[in-house]
View 1 (cartoon, rainbow, N blue to C red):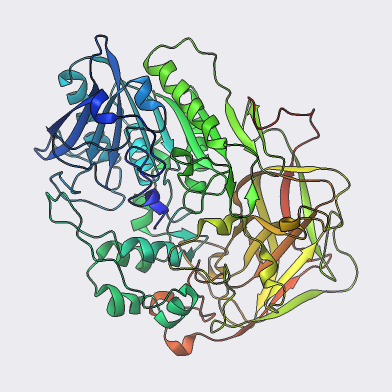
View 2 (view 1 turned 135 degrees about the horizontal axis):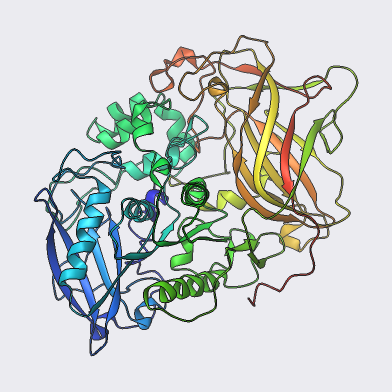
Length: 617
């Protein structure tokens, strides 16, 4: 998805030119191009950069990518090697086009599955390609010290995670950053059964099959014919029409993405987390609290390694960033929200120390288990575990739009609204074609007059409330249709005396959709019985956010979030092939009674001593 599966072509951590530093790569590094033979004979293009005039031995930093390692040719150099500061520290950088992309041979498979067992000595997957690459590098690249590190963001982060499985002994450290982990369960493709439409469509109009080898991906930019994404996707109709009308059935990656609407064998084969057993390298998982693409994958990767490889050194760093932004930007703000410091500098220093420690035997101080940024108060925390110790609380939805820690009581009560697929709730006002990363902190007041969005608001807080960990809605609902989405948002409401641009601001803290037909199983959807009360329970990715004294907590519920997610026709069936007549209005009810108490479960951190400001560690 654009900005997804890797900050598309322009946010590659090793190749980004935005905000390029003044370090002269060509004068300081010598480039050599290789074609490394894999065990099945396929050759993978790999560019290696070795510091000039360096007499010692150095570790290798490897990044594998489907987005191209250009500029190609021995005399052509990128503007940057690694995140800011890495090239000056001096590593041997190795950049590789993965199988079937750009200058590498073979067939590319989108999110190529990891095999439980290899069929023989020439059988391959991403783990073997990584192993064979590392084996060749340490045996053939001059001046290396026998230690290899891997790093990469998004799709490149996925390939870094692949390198941890059945890894080469020389792999000493790896940093999967915003890695995809489970595309169906919350990463780029589906969130709780709802398809992330705008991100996927904009990505796959520029990511297609290639005829290798090729140094340049000559894809004509897609012409939307309008700058209004809401209008464009509403006119698109059912997803199957997108192939016929726009992509001309030429992109199998896009087709695979939208036709597999359930958690079927296609998605299960691409679920990498169960393979993260016996990890031997030191691991630093990096992500952003406002990553609209792979926040879920980041947290799940960290948790899976900690749980399945308990003896592995695995640490977590999380900051207030959108997808991959820590690699090249300041990280000082997102949209209207300021973080009071150049937060990305702290992360880059953290990851540089990590690689120096495990690849160069640096004697730097041991890093914390979790180095995480608290949004709301804009402070870094060094924690011994993630999530930190918390107390569970339930925010109950109440009559009259109130939000309370007390369960509802009294007569049966519900809120009702009409959800119309012909007039879906927008995720942003006037959104352009690509997914807007700022939606993760956007002001929700633009929805105040929508009758198909219900809001529940707490009293003004008498003290700071810091939530750490997952946000878990538990709703009792009914619909007059046979299928409906129920999207839940947690919002920080600023007081009227906040700074002028934030007075009354309704900042989105976390929000996720849920496609109702998957309330019992993501593999076997079931229709609603119109009018029957059903329970929907799910969890959103972790937050670490402080609702400050004087602020209020809001929960919103709606049944569309367009075109962030595709429209639910509200008629049970195969949504990509739904007919126009299947898209019908439905009356949605959210119940809040003593028998059916809808709530959002949160994890609140006990009050702690004052913390250091964001400008220091």
